[in-house]
Image 1 (cartoon, rainbow, N blue to C red):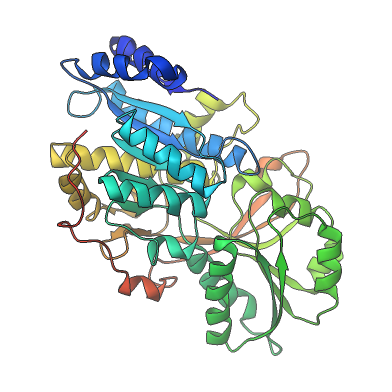
Image 2: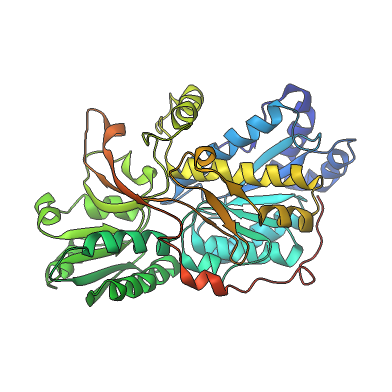
Length: 428
């Protein structure tokens, strides 16, 4: 994993200094002084996502999306005449360690902004530290509904759709025109899983369904076959899953495809990074925010740009994680430009007013930042995965889409953010 990403030769010296900062603990403070004494110091963005463990491929994809946006800005002189430098740190999946990493990045490395997360528990932990210092935290890719309600902050902005958005669209789709609407919940035992299941219950009731049981799945998923036996023992018409990352691959690798023919299985969200590496594993209905083969303006050009740079890697087609990180990073940098300063209060006000047309977002509907919850409202797509080992990139099939208002998570209308008065000024 690269520690530093530079593309503009004129900025190379400062970039090398910053790479050295993050890899040499004993020399960090002295070198920071030199780097920040430059006439035009760089804008430093820390990419914080677990580069080890079950979300490692998601983190790589997230970083690539951020790189693509940063490259665009650096190619035309950076932002406010300053180079943008991306440095990477692994917060792991330990919330306490993640908080320590955030504290160190701010107090020792003097980073300007943080971006990433992937895991919602890590996002909540790190963003709380950022709020304490006034550092803007861009949650590019984690989808717990709690991120934009009880764990929301004035300095945090959430760019992925939440499980509440996905579940609202999917449950309505799965239960439509069904006479029997018995639903079994299959829930990952973590903050994301439980909060996602809670929203599922609400939408199931909204559609006239009944929850007939819930099977809790350990985060380590030690016995996928045993879990499937539990599910088989509970009569249900629909199985609603809130299981993430590599756990999906392990679970669906053991499901008999006939089961999916006889029973409707719904997965709140399935990222490209969970599908493309396992092309022979089937998937039922799931939600996404974008796909490389969606017929929307700008998509083909974006895919071509990605493949020119990353086309020889194992993830040679872009997915929704890359799309979200690209636009999240672009939103931050554009907000700094419009504000004319890196002062966090000014940048936050610009981020709160983000508006994108459908064409700009490469989606079917316009997208906008909710100023109350700091959560981007966007199109949700309903998809399925029909394995094609010969051409795995073509396995994803889009079945329909729902507008931001159709999938709105109503609890976000009551989100309470810290006031500007209670948010420290921070101007990196």
